Image (cartoon, rainbow, N blue to C red; front, side, top):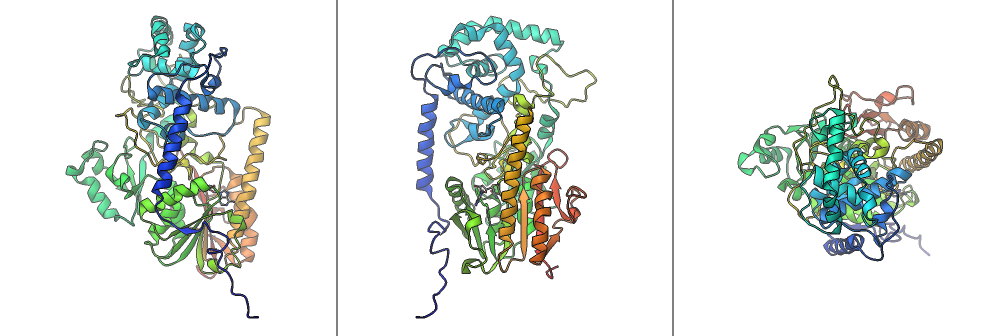
Length: 583
Ligand SMILES: C[S@@+](CC[C@H](N)C(=O)[O-])C[C@H]1O[C@@H](n2cnc3c(N)ncnc32)[C@H](O)[C@@H]1O
C-alpha cells in the first residue's frame, strides 16, 4: 500500500472553509427574521401587570410586553426598549448588547433617530428621573413603564414634542403642567438658564466629543489620492458632509490609508462609505494590519477574525494577492465577515467556521506557507468604553448629576447644545462609535435625529463576551478579575498556538483592552516560548510615543498602546513577534 497523501484540512473536516462569496439571500433572511423579532418585541400584548417601583431596572415592564403601553412612535418605542435593556444590564452588571447595537442593529427602523433619542434620553436621565418621580407620573397608570416615561418626557421637555398620540403619550401630556413645573423648579434651584445645563458633562463625554472621526480607504477599490480628491471636490459635497469639511480631511501621519475628519463629521451616509471605498474604522483598529505588514502573495492567517475589519484590511494591504485564512468560531459573526469581504472586494479571504485552537497549524499542509498571523482574540473591550458610550449609563455617572450645574469657574467644556430635538451632546454630535463585533469602535457615528430611514448600517454589535468595567462591590470586582483571567488564558493559548505555524515570520497580537493582564502580561507569559521558537519582540511603529507599561515585560518599549483620551482613538494594545534573523 502506498503512503497516504495528507488530506487538506481545507477540503476535509472544515466543510465551511470556503472562498468568500456574497450571501445576499442569507442576509435578507436574517434581516427579515430580525424585523419580525423586533415587531414582536414592540407590539403590546397581554393583560396589564402589577406596577413596579421606579428604580433603575424596571425594564421588565417593557420587556414582558404583556402589560405596558408602548410609545406610538416607532423611534420612541425602540428607544425605550433599548434603554430598558441598557439600564437593566448596567444595574445588574451583566454583559449585554451595546447602545449602538440596540439602536442601529438590522432590525431597527429609523436608526439615526432611534440612536439620537436613546443617547439624549440617557444623557438627560438624572433630570428625567427626578422630574418623572417628583411629578408622580408613574403613579397614574401601571401600564406606563419608566423607560417609556423617560423617553416621552425627553421628547416633551427637550425633544420634538409628542406628535403621535397613543395612551402613553396622552398620559404624559395630561401630566405636562406638573412635569414642566418640576423642571422649572430644578432649573431655578440650580440657577441655570437652560434646563439642559442641569447636566454636567463628564470628562469622558468631553473626550469623546473631541475625537476626530477616522475612516480607512479601502485600497482594493480606490487609492488614498482618489479618495481625497473625491472628498475635496465641491461638486460632490453631500448632505452629510460639506465641501468645507472635505477640505479638512487629513491623512493620518502614522497610517497612510487612514483619513481623519473633524469630530462632528457624519460619514455614515456618504457614498464612499456606502460603496465600501471608505471603511468606518478607528485608527487604533487599523494599526494591527499595518503592524503585520503582509506582502502581496503571502498566506496570512487571521485567528479570531470576525466581523473582519482587520481581515479586509490585511487583504487590502496585500493588494488582494495571496490568501487570508480567516477563522472564527461564531457562525453569525462569520457571516458578517463574509458579507464584509464581499462588499469590500476582498476575494482573497477564505473564511472558516472553527475553533482556532483546534486547527492543526503545525501539521496541516494548508498552513505550511503561512508567513503572517494576526491574533486579535476576544477581550474585555475596556479600551472601547468611550466609543460604546458607557459614560451615559448610571453606573458611570460619577460626574453628571441633575440639578448640579457646572461651577462658573469650571473648566467644563462647551456642550455644543443646539436646542430641542437635536442630539448635540454626550452621545451627541461628537461621539464616535461602533462595531466591536470587531471592536465596537470600528465604525463611528454622529447621532443627530435625521430623516427616518430603514436602511441598514454597517455597525457591529459587541461580541457576546465583552464586559463592562464594573467595580461597585468586591464580588463584582472578583468576578471581573476572574473573567479577565479567563480571557487572558485564552489569549495566551491563541498566541502560543499561532506561533506553531512552521513558516511564520511575523505575528501580531492585539486587543482593544486597557488591562495589563490582557496585554503586557499575556506577552510576558508567551515570550519565553516564543523565544524558544526563534521569535522576539519588534517595534512596528518606532515613531509612536505610547508604549507598554514600563517594567511589565522585557521589551515593553517595543509594545504599542493607545490611550482613549490622549490619542483620540480607542484604547488599544499590540505586540509584534518576529522570527529572529529577519530583522
Ligand atoms: C475581538 S473579536 C475579533 C475582531 C476582528 N479581528 C475584527 O477586527 O473585526 C474576537 C473574535 O474572536 C472570536 N473567537 C473567540 N474565541 C475563538 C476561538 N476559540 N476560535 C476562533 N474564534 C474565536 C469571537 O467569536 C470574535 O469574533
